[in-house]
Every structure is written in structure tokens, then in C-alpha cells.
Image (cartoon, rainbow, N blue to C red; front, side, top):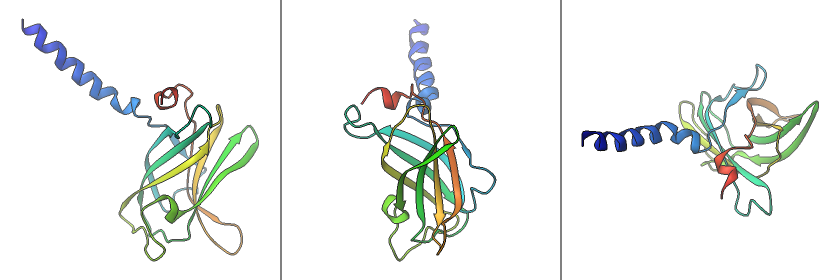
Amino acid sequence: MAMSHVQPMLLLLASLFFLPVLHGAIDFEYCAKNGNDYGNVTRIEVSPSIGFSENPYITINLFCSASKNIFPGTLVYVTYRSGDFIGFLRTYNLCDVTACNTESVIEAGTNFELTLPEVLYVKEITYSVSLRERTYQDPIIKMCVDFKVPTSAPALVTI
């Protein structure tokens, strides 16, 4: 009789242990050595956009902590790499993908989330998301992560 109470508890503990895996968390690494002047990325999650079966787009969520103030006007680039080829997928203004406005900053020491909608999903490529300081010449990369979206990610298998 005592065994019947233990089994549900073990099932609950096992489901809590595997919950982060089923939520779509993605392994990532920082790009090169110059990619994290603005702070750190703590987690990346990927989910299919509405109508994924007809239009293969994903939404990428980056959970970050700022080590420096990040000002409006910062650009967010989503690029991909396949072999030696690098291509652009999307460019966003920072305030379009996080909680900020044109007069405020993301302050050093705070956590923030970037929600990047409608990114084209392509199997077996490496995605890069970077925050770039806008300059008069080419934008300067201040934070950058690389990751692959697993083809077996539960979030991409079912909608």
C-alpha cells in the first residue's frame, strides 16, 4: 500500500526534472571572444510561430542580464551560418523586441528578455543573435551567441 503513494511522487519529481528540456531550452555558446560586452545570456528558448506548418518561422527568446547600460538605438541582428556562408535573417531595433522605449535604457545589473518573432526556420544551420551598437560606420558587436535549433525540439514537433 505504501508503494502506491511513492510512485506518483517519483513521477512528479521526474517530470519536474525533465520540464526544462521539454520547454525548448537551447544550448548556446558565445561568438568568438568579443561577444559579451553588454552582459550575459542565461537561457535561449525557441518556439514555432503561429502557422508553423505553412510558414516555417520561429520565435527566439533570449533571457539576458546587462553588465552595462544598453541604450535605445541598439540593433539586434539574427544571422545564420552554413559552412562558410553567413547570411542575414532579420534585424530589429532593441525597443521593438524588449521592454524599453526611445527615452530609457536597459540598466546595468538588470535582467531583460529579447523576443525575436518571425525568424525563418532552417534545419541544420547555426543561428547567431547579436546586439550591435549603432555607429556611423558598421555596427559594433557588443553581445553575441551562436546556437542550433534541434530538429527534434518538442516545441517544433507539435503546435
